[in-house]
Length: 195
Ligand SMILES: [Zn+2]
Image (cartoon, rainbow, N blue to C red):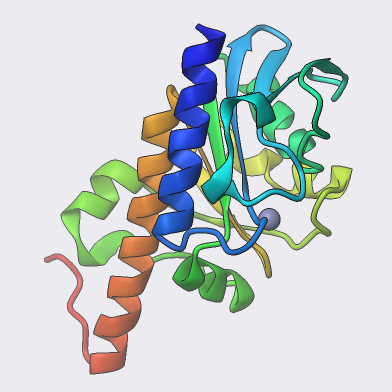
């Protein structure tokens, strides 16, 4: 199963990079393998070019159990979600262009423009700013873990979580689509919310 999960992480990494949900070495992806063990992407490596051997197995304290690379400095963001939600098995953190612009403006996403957004994304709140890679960043998302599918990280990007890696990825892809569409509609002027 671990080998299959590593393949899935590499595949999702390629999709994120190809769809401009991350630039350069940005972003990180994880899958919970069992209680207290997760596979996570390495630090300082493009998500578009990872191979299975680059993926690292760590415990919730960040100790490396398998793999030769250094795990993402953002692992606390991932373990905080896994510790709070037993039903969550995969997490995606990305810096999609439009979502990141919403993050810079600290603007929550108004889902009332399209029915699919309400159904599949739910409310996407903005977590308070904290420096990347810190305990404070992991703490900033805590108020939103139980009742949301992810959140926007102020002045940074976004994180999404789900029962499996493809679902977590699709949330991020849809969030970017929706933010981009909302922005264009608002720019065109007078967007209508669903009656
Ligand atoms: Zn980031």
